[in-house]
Image (cartoon, rainbow, N blue to C red; front, side, top):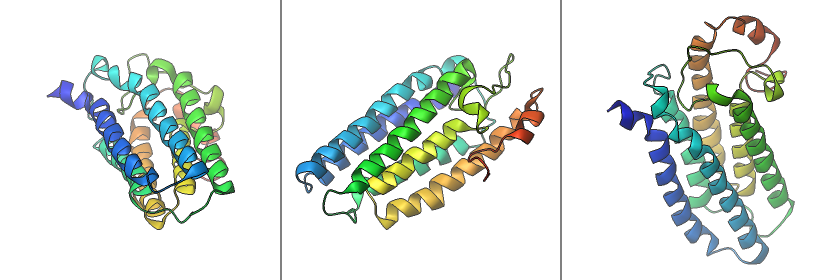
Length: 215
């Protein structure tokens, strides 16, 4: 049972890709020309991102059981999935190619890159589940010089890009009412564990959680 629970992020990612592909086929069949090509490039980039992060999910079982995240992993994943599903399932406000395509794609790529750099910087201490390892240390280099949770900053930024590119009110609502609150809840749960690390309280005083100068 514990092994199955640790593999849930990977199982979710596989199912998520299947849903994305199905919805994309239906959505982009109604788009033409540059919009269709742009949509294919965006969705292809999103799936590539999922693939790159799947390597982390494969290591979850080896890290042992943890229940410290209190269900926030599932809520966070649901918020992410609903944001993307709403983007693909409902009609976009945009009916013609425009600067919104470049803006949305640019914000998305920037968010993904920032998140992947944060994951790489954290190294073995990164996990999809909330856990503190025996040799856990505070990391303050790279993007962690800017905020305490840059991987979440990258996740939020990437999905702002999704909202811009496929804009409709349902996608915006999913991001603001589900993804963002679940992310905030997860950060608070995560910090319950992190504040036990030597040096983390001092690090936290000097760095915002998610957005510089905001929170």
